[in-house]
Length: 114
Image 1 (cartoon, rainbow, N blue to C red):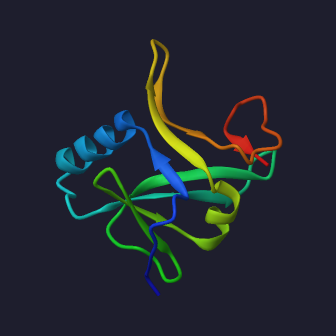
Image 2: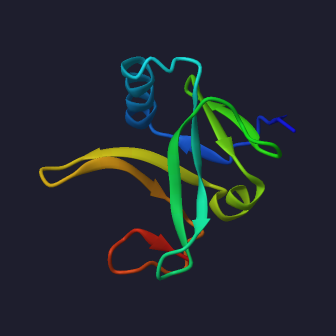
């Protein structure tokens, strides 16, 4: 079941929203949305799941932030409420970064949170 909400669960920075739009255009996926969430795994318990998807899954909440559709499952919403998705570019790497105020621990590699 698809749900719509106006509650701010996850926000995108201008840079992140712009990068998603560029990716959607580049990959000819204009009607797709951004999946943002967590999956069990990693040394601290969870890893972030972020990617482009054509449609929400059953029980997903569908958000819209800065012109980007965001799909999230209930478990991810509970863990990520108040998070911000940013896009960072450095000399060594670039990609989406999630700033999550609910994280109590993370591993040394920076890919696993709990």
